[in-house]
Image (tube, rainbow over all chains, first blue to last red; front, side, top):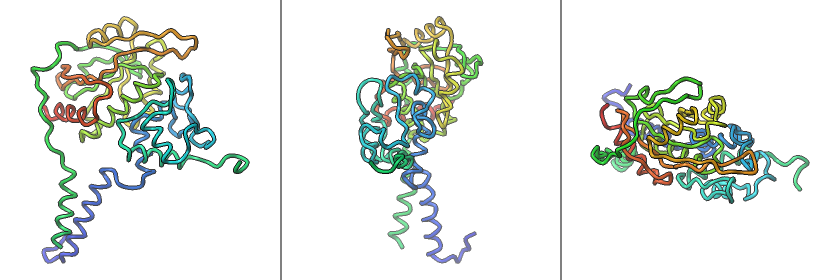
Length: 128
Length: 190
């Protein structure tokens, strides 16, 4: 509890703490964590699966099935965070593939991409 | 010190939202209405069951490769942007593909969302009736593969706390417009 004679510094620290809490609630924190949250909120798992393995409940009924995010060789439009964010925002091609999610901001797409990158695993057998 | 305090206050005030512009009741569409369908839990659902909360209604199907994923993302984003708790707003996903979208399939579908919508299905006749009530249309696209597509109305319908259709939006409406409309409905008393 703050006493009446609390130092100005303590007051500032308390207020900065409150502001920090508000900012975190508004979306600060680690990009990867924000991305995981957005992925779950926006229903990406319907096609891509909860763990990004390409095994969502609708995946089997798509003509072009989603990729396993763990497999970097499966990415058709680049596996970097930047490339993935671009695919999210602009889509990945013809009908049946990933549609464009232009409702997401560049930052949100980048956050989701950061989480997807965290799922990637080195190809079996080492680098080509 | 003063600069720091100003900065802190600016940060805190940035988290507050301006009131949404009121949505005119006079402009509400003259269609829509109550309906009864079946949920993903194989239970009857009446629109009247969720009276008291604004409803976002969308017609789609779970294996839709484009419009439905984009629209569901837009809806969840708008609810969040409106500053609403997910439980403040009811999202209804009415399947226009009842043959494939059985309650069991719908149950898996809704489980893929952090805040699951209520997914609804019914007989062909029941779905046709609800679609007609909302001036929505759909038709199966013949296909050589089992993964047929369904062309369907992609509008996002907003229903107020009293169960009245108040407004509808194109699927690609700006998220902020959809959020403003939702906030307006949330601000209304039941």
